[in-house]
Amino acid sequence: MSHPVDSIRRMTPLAHLQRPTVNEAGAEPPPAPQPVPPPAGAVDPTERRGPFRPGRLAPARERLSGRLAMRLFQVGDILAVAALVLVFAADTPAGTPVYLGSALGVLAAIGLLGGYGFARREGLVLHLARLAAAFVAGQAASWLILLPWAPPAAWGPGLGLCAAASLTTLYLLHALWWTSVRRWRAQGRLTPNIVVVGATGAAERLIAALKESREANVLGVFDDRAARSPGDIHGVPVLGSTADLLNHRMMPYVDRVVITVPPRARTRVRQLIGRLRVLPNEITLLLENGSGPVDVAILSRIADVPLAHISGAPTDHLRALVKRAQDVVVGAVALVVTSPVMLAIAIAVRLDSPGPVLFRQRRHGFNNEEIVVWKFRSMRAADQDLTAARQVSVQDDRVTRVGRFIRRTSLDELPQLLNVLKGEMSLVGPRPHAVGMMTGDVESARLVDEYAHRHRMKPGMTGYAAIHGSRGPVDTPASVRRRVALDVEYIERQSFWFDLYIMAMTLPCLLGDAKAVR
Image (tube, rainbow, N blue to C red; front, side):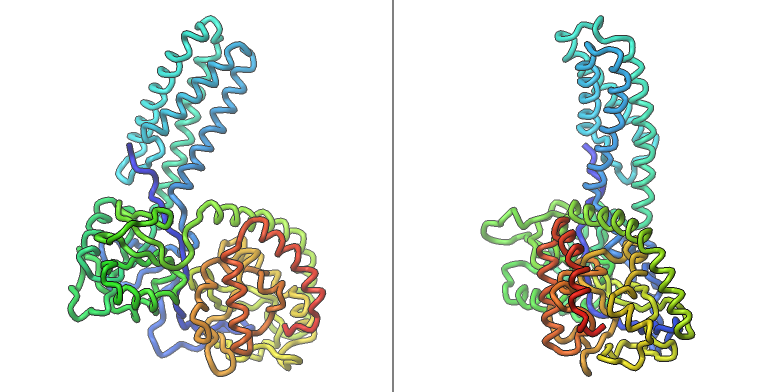
């Protein structure tokens, strides 16, 4: 049977890439002395590339679950065939069990004979041929089974037409599924990206297995003993030490970090885990040659190699899909409902002070990806804070008259509905912080070891921390620690109903904390 569409592991964020913040006037900051990073997802031609490196690195938030896609394809087939059965069986009530049995036989045969495999080297013609073979086998088996219970006289003339219509519909659907899978693979959205820590024999075997199966892309190998490590493993470059990994700019595109140091080297494994826990990315330990029983509940597999979850947010593709659907539906409705309000705010901002209506700022998103967040301009355009070094304070002289009102009511955040619909943000989640945000004279991210853990989920327009009073600036180490703790608690508890509760509590909280600095 063909393998299902490549499954993926989920995203978890990275260390702190220092790109300058765009100021409220919309002006780009002056060029930095260091080389300018390439656009998001683009491959720097000067970087060392291996055999797995795709032409475009898709952010982890864009990754799709192959297994979930397969299930959705199956649901699409079931709904289409069920609709046809209802139409053709309407005139032959006595033959309805035969129509249903035939449909079930066909759908079961498609699954059993690999009709949802979409192997990389399988062309559309071959896939449709496999579909036709499964269809014929399913129809024949179901008719043979049903024959003793329902003689052909009771089947009615529509059964053949229903079969022909079903095959035609399935052909069209599977051509769409095949095209979608092909496009997603080209975009780098189906195959997970991993990096390996430890240039060991286990790493060699894992990379060799992945070159054969293509279940994941190995972007690089990192090892603290780089001086004794080879330049590459099966063509995958050794890119440096774990310190280099923590600050590598490709980490927002990495779904998983795999430690390939043998578990029996406990001291070294413990040290590596201690260093890597600051990452939002999922971290797993390869269990090859491990000793003792293994709890299968915490295992996943890549290339038939067992992995134990160590840190980061484990993949829950169904929960992510439900959350995304919630964002799209509620976000689209909210955008339509608030459009008149947004238009009025835009006019007021324009009349109140010279400068653009909107301003954009680079902030950390999911997996520490840098995203551009939109807001209504609330400060004078001439006041620039390119590095977010100065957080807003009480009676801040940079804030305009209209700005004070829209900040106090959080109406300045409404343009972020566009970020939500684009998939960069969510309606509910940890609030996105500016890249390089300072708390006093210290970068906020350096005050809490678990700071990046808040990036294990997309940032939100509102969040659990916000309804508990942690809104606005975090200008003390204690306020940073409290917000991170609330954000991590939300990520651990997140659910559809919990998100609805937070949305419902947001408006009362906004009306009740007029003293909050915004």
